[in-house]
Image (cartoon, rainbow, N blue to C red; front, side):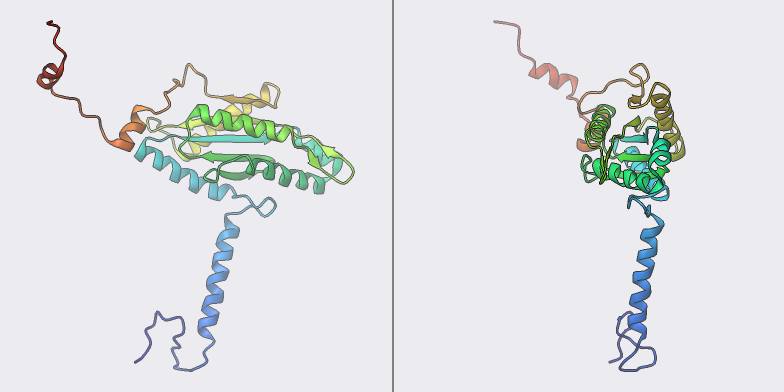
Length: 240
């Protein structure tokens, strides 16, 4: 019986030893490698801006469907030009890689750490409310302060500024709009003196309980209230 065309060992010319299957496999692996490279920053190994936008769009759509919020942290290493000017760009590259290693150790596996450009980074926190995102940013800030870059002849102390924002199902934002809004908080942190965390103010973002109504509905469905007659029937009698 002739082998189907989908078989990896099939040769269109009927040859017993055909180079086509091996070449097809090689091309597939090369395509996979190029696809990965197109979404990865070559210096740090983090996802790049292209992957960031695709992943953020996916998480925002998940928020619209489930009601679970998506948070975003924008990070900029403080005065990083001084590191390059003082110690050279090779040392600057090592400092960038070190900072990303420190942050990776302090993030969840589901969090998406990306290099946005230069010394600026973005972290997507799926299913995360603002208060939890602020705790994550504080953890990253403290970890970086406590872990100077270890070089053979010196240690370089780094700090970073953070802008934190949260997207909810009630927001009407595009990916670009969400990034822009979070970036405004990052700029605010830099203007205020750097090495700090800025975020949406309490007067514009109400603090929510541990599980919001939207989240409860997404998980368990809408709550059904008992009929008025049933409620009266089950109410304890006030008579002795």
